[in-house]
Amino acid sequence: MTTRQRLAVLLAVILVVGVGSAAYALTEFRRGREIASRPPTVPTAGTTGTDGSAPTLTGPRIVFRHTGLDQEYGVVAEVPLSDPSGARTFTGVSCDRVAAVATGASCLRTQRGVVTTFAQLDLNSDWSQRESTALPGIPSRTRMSTDGTLEASTSFVTGHSYMTAGFSTATEIHRVGGVSYGNLESFALYLDGRRSEPTDRNIWGVTFAPDDRTFYATVSTHGVTYLAQGDLATRTLRSIARSVECPSLSPDGTRIAFKQKVDHASGTWWTPAVLDLRTMRRTVLSGETRNVDDQIAWLDDSTLLYGLPREGEAGVTDVWSLAASAGARPALFIQQAWSPTVVR
Image (cartoon, rainbow, N blue to C red):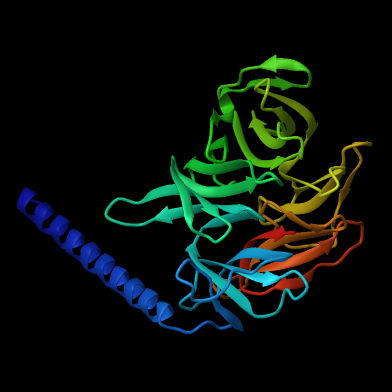
């Protein structure tokens, strides 16, 4: 084949790929516009916001990301704690991940444009913005302390999930409206009682204790995951257990809910589990047989909440509940929902 023939073949391939890519992009654009024009597919109580269009919910409630394929897709919604399946009030704020307390919320958001960027928004209780901070990568996890003074964010710097080989995370903690403690990889790390400085460390999934300085997080290095207890005052992280990912401290502060990696024919798989911090006894909740790749939340001292993708409906997720005891079976809690937080 001559050089001219090779060039002609190359140009033909480029043309075919270009036309195919353009057609795909156009199809996705049209699909996005179609979804954005659909009315909400669940009962609604209106849209919350600073324009007075509807009142913000007060009192005990559940805050979450709406995932119905309609015009409110990705928007944060609220329902009364007493009626999880009832009409939802939309906040008008779009988030990939959200965590909330009575005084405000943390929202991790992908901001698409000519250049895609990522941000953590600090929000007031009426969902107006206090502050915006750039994130170094794709949003993954966020949590707030119960008094609303501390916020944590985790983002993927490389890779896009915990199943991706060679993924890397950046996890930061800051005081709302105040000082940042920076990337937790800068904290002194102690594994099994010994100071360790692994270059491959990854830290994610913060959960806060109520004393305003203690937190828990996942630390991963050399293929091993640890539950680490952190101290903001001393800037230290100390491992206290192994094989614990995405911890969530119970409201009474005595247990950690987490996802535990288990053997499965399809590869990487996680199941919910609970660790008693007093006895260090763990209970694997094998009644849930699906892959739970989420940072679990607590509904109360005896019940867990987590999100799962809906089979056959790309982009749609549901929140499920599960009693924190051996043999418990999951139940659908809120349909078309993700990233739940209980606000009391």
